[in-house]
Image (tube, rainbow, N blue to C red; front, top):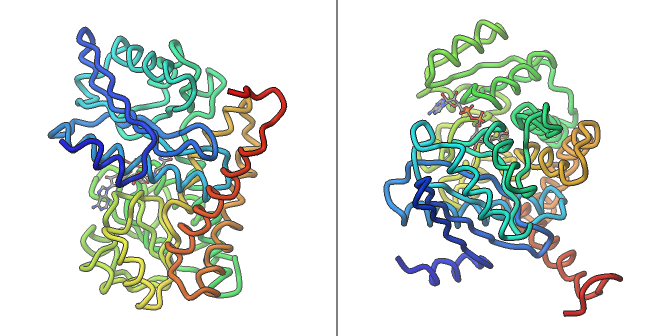
Length: 360
Ligand SMILES: NC(=O)c1ccc[n+]([C@@H]2O[C@H](COP(=O)([O-])OP(=O)(O)OC[C@H]3O[C@@H](n4cnc5c(N)ncnc54)[C@H](O)[C@@H]3O)[C@@H](O)[C@H]2O)c1
């Protein structure tokens, strides 16, 4: 495994390996950037086939968090952690607390939260060892499940797309096709139905499909067909990589806005979408609601302040679409450029030493 080559390629600051024989902990923490603030990103608990897979994944995810935080206008850098193992069988209080101690040893340079395979309850356990874990339960004074807030941000982004394309943010009568009605997708469908939009859904889980169609009275289609549905907005809320060379020519929508992380299989897919005349809402901009929500815990959680900030995803989305139009670049490139400008300019402010900061 060529560690330094990979780290150099991604521009990461630091990679920490955590091991504990007694609990069986094997964790990798990647800090991509602290230019804007502490590196925040969740802990993924996943049965990676190889250590190399875990290493590549954590570097990729950490880098993505840098862009997500910057695009959301937060004073945060990007980081991520992975614990190698099956959360169903390998997770224990001992392991989580051992892991949390390693997080704590980084002194706040890396702040963790929940991700695939970890829960709000796990964050509560971690917080017994470190204050650098966010997204604890409401009972513990935390932000709780981020999913409904992510959906709210997605809804704001969909309204911004609608205003940009059709000159009206109103979603009543618009037709949506939603792929994946799990935690985020189902809450998004609820908001759309309340806004009197027409919704069509698909999910590989029969149970999720049953809940969505019965609870919200929306129509369901086969998972193989959802991206081909004739609609105004297609919303991928399942897994990453769903927009690719095969699926993009089959899209039958005018815009794409969804919560899934890493929707584009490769960077060129943003151009492929643009060439079809479809407006793409960059995933790391439109799905930042969860991050914005947990970030608020750093200031003593206020639901009202967090939601207000999440609603600003409307403005962020519109700004990116305007840049894309004015500069003749695709929205993904516009979003990356905006994030990089922020990292450069705000990050550079550190050359002015504030009073009380150590002189080193
Ligand atoms: N939960 C959050 O706050 C949050 C924040 C940012 C990004 N995201 C991303 O949004 C996506 C959804 O997150 P979630 O928390 O709702 O996850 P989830 O696991 O609750 O829901 C995902 C749903 O997609 C379904 N699914 C899987 N493969 C499918 C396929 N091929 N076709 C149709 N349905 C399929 C699953 O059955 C499940 O119901 C993920 O990519 C996640 O990384 C989530």
